[in-house]
Image (cartoon, rainbow, N blue to C red):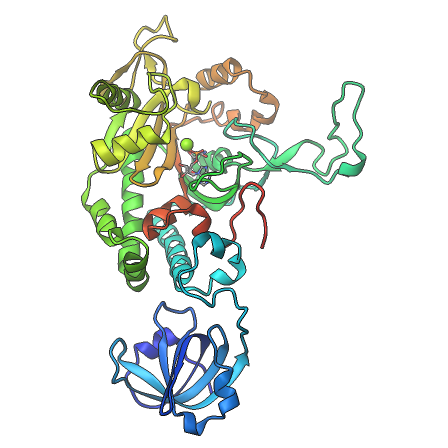
Amino acid sequence: MKRTKIIDLLASQPGGEVCAKGWVRSHRGSKNVDFIALNDGSTIRNIQVVADPTKFDEELLKLITTGACLSVEGQLVESVGSGQAVEIQATKIEVLGTCGADYPMQKKGQTFEYMRQHAHMRLRTNTFGAVMRIRHNMAMAIHTYFHDHGFFYFHTPLITASDCEGAGNMFQVTTKNLYDLQKDENGQISYDDDFFGEQTALTVSGQLEGELGATALGAIYTFGPTFRAENSNTPRHLAEFWMIEPEVAFLDQEELMDLEEDFIKYCVRWALDHCQDDLEFLNKMIDKTLIERLQGVLKETFVRLTYTEGINILQEAIKNGRKFEFPCNWGDDLASEHERYLVEEHFKKPVIMTDYPRAFKSFYMKQNTPVDANNPEGASVGYRGSVAPGPTMQGTDVLFPAIGEIIGGSVREEDYNKLMGEIDRRQMDKTHLWWYVDTRRWGSCPHAGFGLGFERLILFVTGMQNIRDVIPFPRTPKSAAF
Ligand code: 4AD
Ligand code: MG
């Protein structure tokens, strides 16, 4: 008999023979009746299987333990119990896979720490099922948004010979025999005989190649894995995470912020529209304010403020007695405590922060105009004419409550001389960037883009606390199991 998914059975009218297959969530037996809650992953909801114990072999019923895999045939009938409209009155039960008492997801209420150690089985729990279905839905939202807005899905390489962010925290890719590494008289390794004939690594971002796509196709987006070998053991960092990077020609800073805000709201709305059951479950079990917070974001207009204005607010707070662990004078990179103060305490809504000091932003960002053209190291003018005490760049990051930075973006420097000046000023190795700067030599155009950390979006949408719990198999320092 053909199997029907539980999500479809639950939406069916009673009547007729059906077959369901799935894993046992619970089995309660008594003298007169057995109740089995069966789940097949198609929905958070279980179908209730009702079995008359006198009609089934006692040994078979004993094998129906939590985690076992069953095939059930029977009549789909109206359910008298609360919680479901229909249930299966079983006529035939087959145990496809038994499950012993050592099944690690046997007990309810295990810690997330424990479940991470059993990541191969945690997917079968209600929480991880909900998170993974939402993750899938967010991927669909993203592709749909960009497709409907005329962006082309553009595939950038994962293996690269350039370091996009200039951060140097990359995983090297080599076929060299590490047990027999030859070095020259200066202690240097030659890559001439390595697979690509030069030193290569896993990419930290598809942006630079994305810009090549945008300056030809007009608007592109990437959606793929990204790798960072930074030793950040935090609930917000992964060594392998997924990033979405749209890049658009002829977009200015104001329009970039519009795109960031519209895009995030679209994703959140999609979750509310498509993931109702899973969100209700997470709202009940993980975070009682989740749905309210998601609805709240749709109503808010994100605050747009410059880094300089942000520093002024933080300084004012310090004057009024607010204590921070890290300093926040103009020129300091904001720590997460500062971002959270602005978003969660001061404004109580998402903030798009712009016009950051050049010192801690990437070389490719558009430089704001110095107030005194003869003194490029002095004050500069940025968003809506705001004046900063030093040189700034048109970065536009989105900061979210409970998450911190969810999007990092910027307008790109399209002026060849300014871009080259910045590369020189940072003493960057130009040999690997020749193709990138060529975009500024031939038909250069204003353009902008951003990167959304996919898992940070999933954190926000699910209310989960740790980024390791929103990706099936997390990669973090000292952890690459599964
Ligand atoms: O701010 P980032 O480093 O920006 C870029 O990579 C640019 N090339 C993007 C662009 O303009 N096209 O990273 C973008 C986002 C961050 O805002 C954050 O959400 C996420 O990627 N992210 C991480 N997520 C998980 N683990 C990490 N280690 C992350 N590092 C960045
Ligand atoms: Mg960033």
